[in-house]
Image 1 (tube, rainbow, N blue to C red):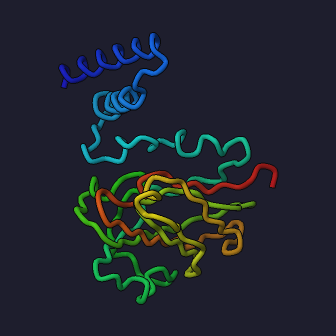
Image 2: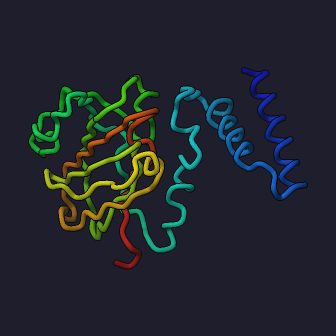
Length: 214
C-alpha cells in the first residue's frame, strides 16, 4: 500500500507537469489517476475495485455543478434505500411501487454506488424504495441510473428515462414531482432500474432541487 501510494503520487506529479507544459495533455488519464489516489490510497476505507467512484463524472460537482446558478438544493436525500431484485419482472404487476408495500424484508443498499460493488452480481431489473420528506417549494429531483429508470411517488408514476440505454446510463435526468408532493410531508419514492450489461444501479447522487427564488 505504501509503495502504491508513492507510485500514484509520482504519476500524478508527472501528469501535472505534462499538463503544465502541453495544453493537449491527456486529461482523461490524469483525472483517473487522481481518482485512484483519492479513493484508494487517501481514503480511510478503500473502495471496491468495481466501485462507481472510479467512473468519470461520479462526483457531485461533475454531475450537478452547472445547476447551482439557477437551482438550490432543498434537503438531503437519504443514501440508504430499501432494495429488491426483480429477475422475473413481476414488480410492476405486483405494485412494488405502492406506498403500502411492506418492504421491511428488503435489503438495505446505498445509492451513489453500483449494486455490484455491494454484493449483487446481477444484470436485470431491480427496485429501490425510500421515505422522503419534501420541504417547501419542492420543484424537481435529478439523478443518474444505469441504465434506465422509472420513478413513482406515493404510487403515482412521475416519469422515466427514455432513449438508448447505452447512451443514458451516465446521464443526469430530471423528474418533475411537484404535482405529487405536499410541502412538509413524507412521501414514498420508488425507482425501478433496468440494467442489461455491466454495472448497474443508482450510482450517482439524487438531489431534491427547486428554482432559486420560487
